[in-house]
Amino acid sequence: MRLILKGLILVGIFSISRFASADMASTNYQINWDSINYGGSDTSTSDSYTLRDTVGNPAAGASESTSYLLRAGYRAGIFDQVISFETFGQDIGSKRSATALIGNLITANTNDLTIGDYIALIQDEGEDQISAIGQIAILGAGTITVDNLKDGGMAPVIDGSNDYLYLLNGNSVDLGTLDNSEVKTTTIGFEINTDVDLGYSVQVYETQGLISGVNELAPVIDGAITSGSEEYGGRSSDTTLIDSTFDTADTAFTTGFQKIADDTGVQFSNRNFLTLKAAISDLTDAGDYSQDLVLIASGNF
Image 1: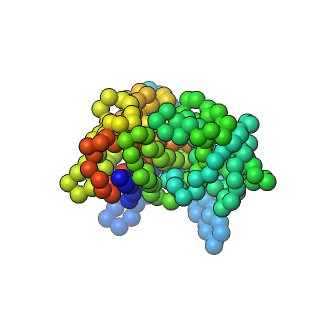
Image 2: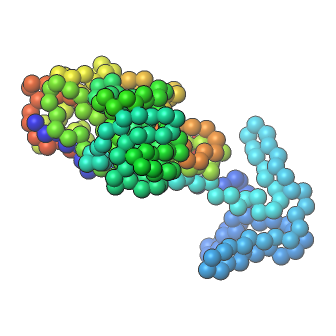
Image 3: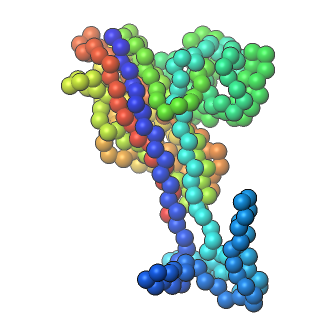
């Protein structure tokens, strides 16, 4: 029986906010931020640079209360709070054995890997696997050094027994061929950079279940996907979620927004991953099963 999860849609949505200012507008013009200065204030540009200049600023600084925040002085209102959001699907064709892990040094075949690639490292692939993701910093002779390994609360221990390394790239994943004797898994990694004071949230929703024609693989309902039972769902590497079960249990996807990761404050190169799991029973209908999942990153304002 072949069950394929394909057509994964990965969407990054970012929000931009600005602090309250004395906006002035007319039918044709708008001044988003004005200031009183000793000299001219202007924006100058060239092919490679942008200069926002102001001469003199009295009473510069920040003031705040419970309900308000004032940032006064040199172009204080010019602050672009943005999010960059990148996702990486596990490439099933890149599978290779991993035989050792010392710190951030992995022993594995380096064919088709390059510096800067993202990888997933998996201990005891299957129902109870332990995973981590990282970005390749150095390639040696049969060794891979990653910048850091982000795990899901427990670091993998690699000894070459059912341990594997995968390349993370593209916007789709594949669960491969399933049978009722094992749980199949795949990984969606994501990295976020946020210049947002209150941090970010990542949510997921499905446009429909994991389906083949009129047949749908049953969503997990007991918190754990086990071999021999028809079940499908996922778990997040973020173990600190408050209003979601993705951090502690295998959880079913729904058409509503579900949180799979969050953090507070400005964050750079913050990584997490979502592990998808599927199992079938003797009664599962054969077919090519597919689903669209949407991942959304948004700032906390």
